[in-house]
Amino acid sequence: MATEVDICNLALAHLGDDATIASLNPPEGSAQAEKSARFYPIARDTLLNMHTWNFASKRGSLATTANTLDQWDYAYAAPSDMMSPVAIISPTAQNDYATRMSAGDTPGGLTSNYAPTIVAGQYTPQQFALETDSTGAYLIYTNQENAVLRYQAKVTDTSQFTPLFVITLSWHLASMLAGPVIKGDQGTAEAKRSTEIMAGYLAQAKQSDNLNRDITVEHIVPWTAGR
Image 1 (tube, helix red, strand yellow):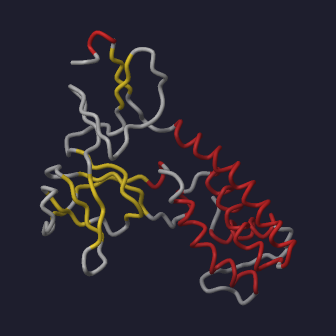
Image 2 (cartoon, rainbow, N blue to C red; image 1 turned 135 degrees about the vertical axis):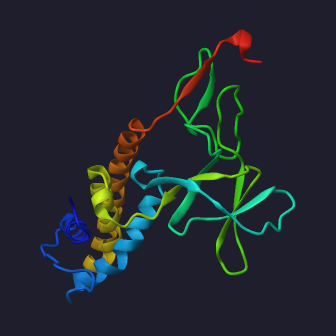
């Protein structure tokens, strides 16, 4: 299991920096530790936002709040640990990844959160809108009664990260540290190189993550497709 310190040291190693930091909170006092402590949370949170990671996926019932918008039937308070909403579903729904496919279609791709398909015998995500109130709190508006939200949580516990997420995060962090650590044209070049390598690992991490996702595909034969 990689710790935050391990990930930061790996990022520095990617840049050819042989320094080894021992503490981030608080930073141990070295320039590398201070820069890592500054950029690590940014790298982690932006990478969490680049994909609907399974390890960060949560679902839970929402608490109703005052609804001031006429175009929606219900308003709910967003969970305190929510990073981004994914789907509003019924409390009785078993699988909000269900997609409808006609014969001859190629499997793959999820039903859009914003263009739901209602299929007989199956439930797909409902439309919703995310806004902030006057206090800055997130509110979720939808027409779904007793709504359940599937969402991406802000995960800070590195023990929940997959190995591919860890290596991707280390290169993402390296791209941010390159300029401050190396400086000049060489730092710029290292930042670009790190970003390119990160993109490659990110593609692998997403593919691996998607393979572990439960997707139910309903096959529709042509003569019943219009029903």
